[in-house]
Amino acid sequence: MSTIEISALTKSYGGGRPALADATFRYEGSGAIGYLGPNGAGKTTTLKLLTGLLRPTRGSARINGFDVHRERKAALADVGAIIESPEPYPSQTVAQAVEMVSDFRRGRSRSIAKEIADLHDRLELPPLDARTGRLSKGQRQRVVIAASLVRDPRIIILDEPTSGLDPKERILVRNLLNDLKKDHLILMSSHLMQEVTEICDQVIFINQGQILLRDTVGNVADRFRTRAVDVEFATPILLDRIRGIGPMVEDAAVVGERRFRISFDGSSSARSAILEALVRLGPVLTYQSASLALEDAYLALMQGDNGTDPALATPPAAR
Amino acid sequence: MAVDPPGVPSDAAQFGMAFRHQVRFYLRTMRFLALLVIVLVATVGFVAATIYYHVGGADAGGYLGGFLGLFTIFGLIIGAFLGGDAIAMDFGSPTGYYTLVLPVRRGTLLLGRYAAAFAASFVLILVYFVVAVSGAVYFHGVLGTPWVEVGESLGLASLYALGVLSVAFLFSSFFRSPATSMISTVLVLFFGLDIATGIAAFAGVDPWFSILWAGDAISEVFPSRVRIAGTGAVPTVPEGIAIMLVYAVLFLVVSAVLYQYKESKG
Image 1: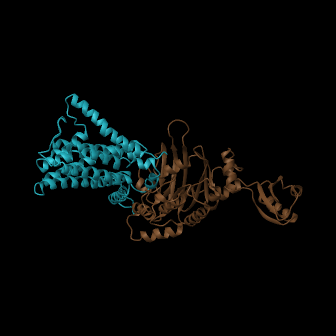
Image 2 (image 1 turned 90 degrees about the vertical axis):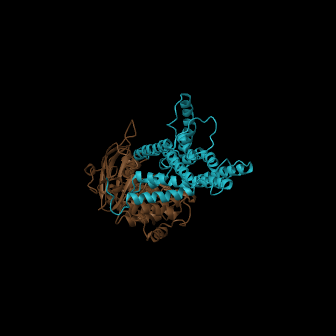
């Protein structure tokens, strides 16, 4: 069974606050874990420590039971990783770039041409004989993603994998990761809450080198419930009529033509009661959360709010 | 000794992979092409000049000794430009993030790259020798050419290239920028050692610490080589071999240790 484990992992770059301080987590089996935090939070440092690009000041990083720094080859044997913005040798063709990774990972294979062709179709790679140095950033990123997946490593570590991709390419990668997470263990950092919401089952929030929270996406969504909804009517409605639909509405504001934002206590009952009352006011075109739950959680955590329920502070997730 | 994990190729197999991919990389770079053009222009120009001015030497050994004596300069440039980015490329460009996350020991990667840099250098050395020997054959015929000494000289030139490559690898492990690393190698080997050699000569000491001096052994195998006046003592062939061997091994080992501990902080 695939495992990723860090224990009291600390990295200092000299004086001052450590880039990562006593970080500990363990995940095993399959699924996708989102690693969230602002720039400089310690996300990339953690991923670099997990892939042997950095040496820990203290603590350990282990993959499949092997210490990444003492048994690097064994630890990374079943890992596909994209850290920062890797680039193959510019003179390599797409096929050669992917084949090189395949060679190092599992040795020469007669079926590699077929596997590369499959990845080419799946990820809509540029022509296999194109030089990687002449590709666009998005094309190169897809080649790098293909290389990280070739020969099917069971653990995938991704540092902002959709960075540089256009919306169509992002959807492609998102669908791929959703497919892969069924039988792979994926740890991915991202700034895109939408992406994490759509791909990940669990999340880790980190800021200033400290892990603030880790839990399932569902639990985080519950804890940091969205306290506003947006509604759009097909016909004009007066703001005062919305404010007056009942005590469950804390406030309401106009956000566009026939569009309103309604604040409430975040409970499911209030949310459905508001919808019922709005439908009675006029034809509702859309009704949705004003922001993503993860986005709310992210903002609250970065401001020092650890959520509404202290009992959830130490999550049982993925131990 | 660490055991290879199941499914992952052995260190020996990965050495072969690193060598193959790196050779392919070197042979496609502009700098390899540029070095090839420089070597061809210089050597063909030299032969053409000797033919034009009818200066073929008293025998083939003398001709080759003078011609191959110039190889130390070319060997230095070749080694610096082919080995100067070997380690820096992993830390000064995004390529490192592509290769260093793979299940391969850094020592294996380093040795594969070293062998590849040597292979690419050897192509250029061969070109140099083929043109030089062509000149000797033109003036003195096939039978007049000292083939055994040519072989020995080729071996020494190869050892010299290995020594220079090791120094280039060492500088490559100091810097993040491949260009800085290449230029530093040339500056230190060319000017630094030249100045130190001058000081040693002033003190009446043989510059045994200099690979440039040791490189004189490349032409020293030809007994009738023509020496340029005022160049001072030259090393014996065993001395040259010993110095070049120490450069090749010592600096490569230090580079490997530095590479092992270097971090991708960028």
